[in-house]
Length: 132
Image: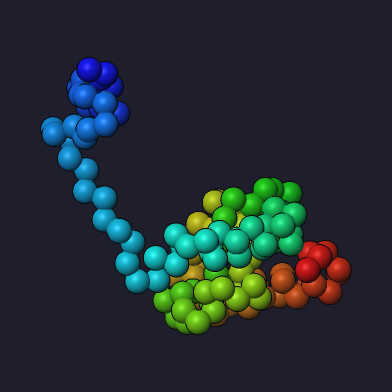
């Protein structure tokens, strides 16, 4: 019989089985979070990243530094309006650090931060960067 090590506790277990000591309960995403696991979202994310060459637009326009984007942020949050989930005009590529900063700003001035993000997208569109 072939054995493997449990990645969590290191116990030796038969290959193809789960460790009985470390039962992990993986729950399936529900509600709006299900959409993040669809092929349509992966395609939309890829389009947005390619459109802006994977550049973190928040860091570029707000902090004047060049960083790579790791995620795509919804300007109007899905909690506020889930109909804009797949709208390319509601998505902006940002790094993890910028994403955390934006959400922190949402707690103090959500509308103002959203206006800044829309202004960044308008400036990018006006300057001709972001080819689609």
